[in-house]
Structures are given as C-alpha cells and as structure tokens.
Image 1 (cartoon, rainbow over the protein chains, first blue to last red):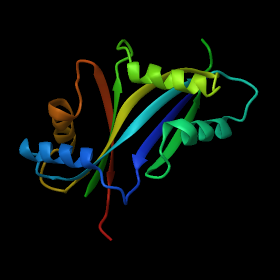
Image 2 (cartoon, each protein chain N blue to C red; image 1 turned 90 degrees about the horizontal axis):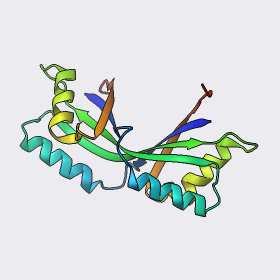
Image 3 (tube, chains in turn blue, cyan; image 1 turned 120 degrees about the vertical axis):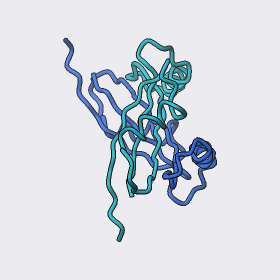
Length: 84
Length: 84
C-alpha cells in the first residue's frame, strides 16, 4: 500500500482571494504580524500496490483531475506502508 | 520573516464527503488502484519577525480561526527566511 500526499498550491502569479480573506480575518483578530496568506489543498491518497509505474500514475491523476495545471502547482510525497 | 506551513486534515473518525467524491471520480477515470482519498487544507503564512512567541502565536491562530479543532487536526512547519 502506498500513502501519497499531494500538496496543491496556487501559482505565485495567481491572485488568492481566499487567502486575502483569511489574512483580513487574522488582522481583525489582532494578528498583525501576518503579512501574507496563501491557501492550497492537501490530498492524501491511499493506493494499492500493483504492477504500475507509481510516479507516472500520480502525475496522470494530478493532471487529469486533482489539479488545474494552468493556475496551480503541485508536489507529492510517497510513503510505502507495510501491512501489519 | 517566517514562512509557516500549516496542514489541516479531518480527523480519522470524521467522514470526508469531498474525499469520497474525488475517489469516485478517480475510479470513473479507471484509476482503480485508489483505495481512499482524504482532503485537507494547506496554508502558507508569512509572518513578520518580532518580539513574540512564534509557536504560541501559530497555535492561537490555528485554534481561533484557521482550523475547527472539533473535527480537524493540524500540524505546522516553520521556515525562517533571511532577507536578501
């Protein structure tokens, strides 16, 4: 079994209105040291082991469904889980 | 300047309908090796340096606004950025 953690972030050049809203809310709670907030997604996938190329599979899933590569970047980490 | 990365995930015992929907979509795209999907949030905060306790500040922000501690867990990483 593999645990795959995918981190999806908006590209630097893309405006992040959700992040701006959270920043405004933090400021109104007197957290004035906050300069910037960017919000992304974090996906944890559990994959069965099998006879396939894991990296290619993850990239295909990210590019077909999980991310919008026009405005988002992604990175991922794979952990192999040994059955107990 | 500090870059703080906060990862927010639903607790194990909490149903994740968004994750189930994504899993269904992946299956319908023939990614049948996907066993489970959990979706969380990923926040990147930029904080000014100052005379405050960073860990306490981050915990306070997370608990007051960024996460719902009844159903969510969070963890964070801090990176110190040296001005260039």
